[in-house]
Length: 185
Image (tube, rainbow, N blue to C red; front, side, top):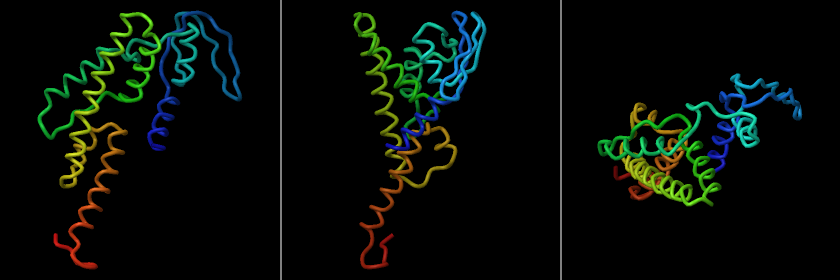
């Protein structure tokens, strides 16, 4: 799971565009300078900084950078209509955004409306993950896949695909070896 943490770290340190809600002077944090911000202007900052500034109401994410329930619905719908054995391409950084969306709706789940939104989002996320995982397991057990299929997988999915492919190949080889060095296949 160290590799997943690295992917998440990459996401946290990727640039996003935000819009300033109010003016803020330049701030220095351990060698990193943030701001100054002028109300209404757009700025590019690291995601983790943007999230902290948004929590304080200093900035807000541009609409195309926000992840919502409709994004989950779109992916889940695409998964449903996908031909068996095929895997659709996910939006960029789908899994990191999904995890943050679920955490945010869970935090806000004190209101009944937000609790329902969180539960529905969680159920759709489980459907997506389970559907894609079944496809990845099937693809891992079959012949090596063309790059066009693995390119449609998210980074997180390629990790498990590669691990499963190695594990299955090793298992298959150990089962099909009759005597030392001799293979049935």
